[in-house]
Length: 110
Image 1 (cartoon, rainbow, N blue to C red):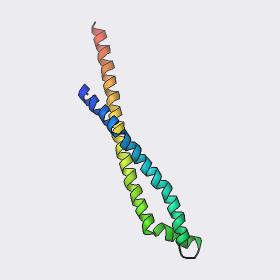
Image 2: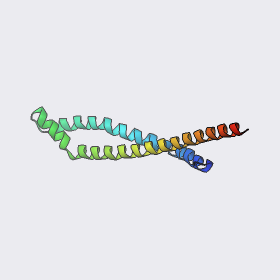
Image 3: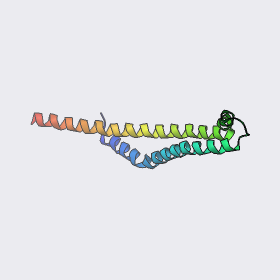
Image 4: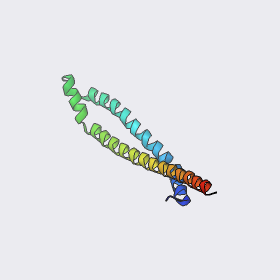
């Protein structure tokens, strides 16, 4: 049974972590978009050759690989926070359902 203290904690979590979730999402989107720019920059820096050779240079470049690693971390953080938020929201919904059920039981006994 979920109690009011659990609900307070869930609501506090949502309030206290909403900014972190927003930042995590912004970081992920930034890194996704920057990856495209970074590929173009590295493509231009690549030694002359075929398009495939230059693309291979860009994709295998250390800077590009670091960006991919950063994107991995950003997605992990965003997903962790997102699912913790969903869990907190579901806890509130379960509590609301429990309260509605309790009111129905109380009315049936009156």
